[in-house]
Image (cartoon, rainbow, N blue to C red):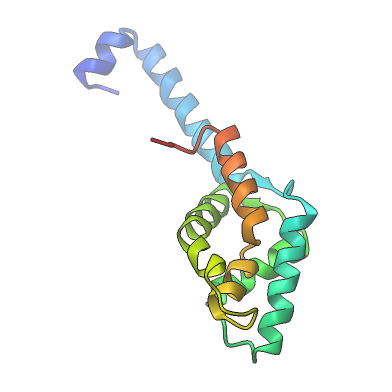
Length: 136
């Protein structure tokens, strides 16, 4: 609140306080807002991933991926941070899904557990809508 640039842009302390309060409130809103507006495709992919993983001895994916699948399959709301993690993982791991030899391939199953391509599209669109995706 006291740096030269901020003081120049907002000469009155009350203005600087209002800006800080706004930024803090926005951060809190984003931290606690959650979203469940992903479609049936996301839920169905997660359900399919759970089914395939069970057939495969439940050996694929991390515990986080398994929990994510349960959340998505049941239609639970997920936080903005989780949407960001979904987008990050699905963007990186898409190649494992695309290049899988069979539906018993762990990369394929793990990708589905996170909601598959439907979740990649949804998370990308949600982050764009929220102004959280910086595409260079």
